[in-house]
Length: 113
Image (tube, rainbow, N blue to C red; front, side):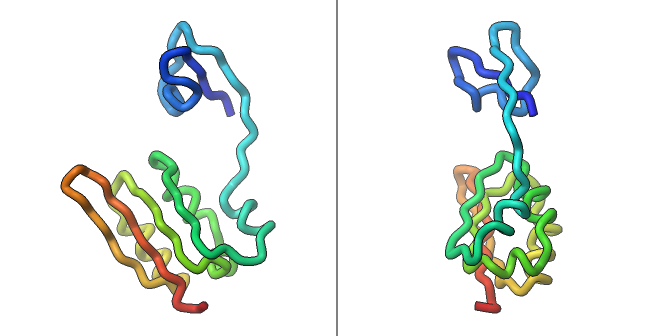
């Protein structure tokens, strides 16, 4: 994947946004969450702040892999219904936290551990 690094914001400043003229192109290798989980025997806490990629990341994982995780904390940016239902179907108890400042998070606790 290509991301762009500008002197003002750094490499994350233009990630996901259109290229600006002064930005330097950087090629990075991506790994899926499923691929990373597959390499680990057990995960106590998974904290995700993926700026909108949380849905694709979690939904790409199968139930067997997700059951390796004890607690998941996910900052989300759009309606979380699909994500909540998927986590529940994988055996998680799900709670939402919303603050007045706009922070919104899903906390999922694995009922199978």
